Length: 150
Image (cartoon, rainbow, N blue to C red; front, side, top):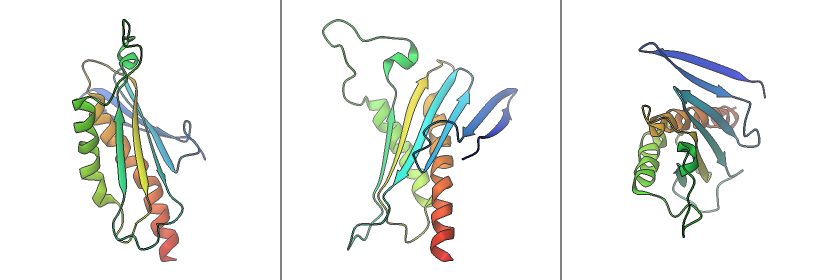
């Protein structure tokens, strides 16, 4: 897979979407950067749908660990806990708009994982995760569609 980079100027600041460098085993992956916020989004699918399945199983998971903002958990709790309310809502915010991007008849189990690598207080990484989810999902959904129609 070759490395491709797209840069967009948004009000004098640069939004960068890069693919082909990280998470090469996934079916589609991108790194989205805006300011000091960096999000890795990968999308994977099952090779074929389960028998007698009549719905599209899409799982969207957004994780923003505290170390991405430069904080290390300490004290009694040493590890990250369950998903926060913001992470749950951001996962839903990712799921709703990308679900229609998949073609009709696409029933393969699909996972879209957004992982915040670096968080900037000025730029919400959830928005970058949404952009990355649409881009990484489109990478393999379009390839699946072309293969199934030919």
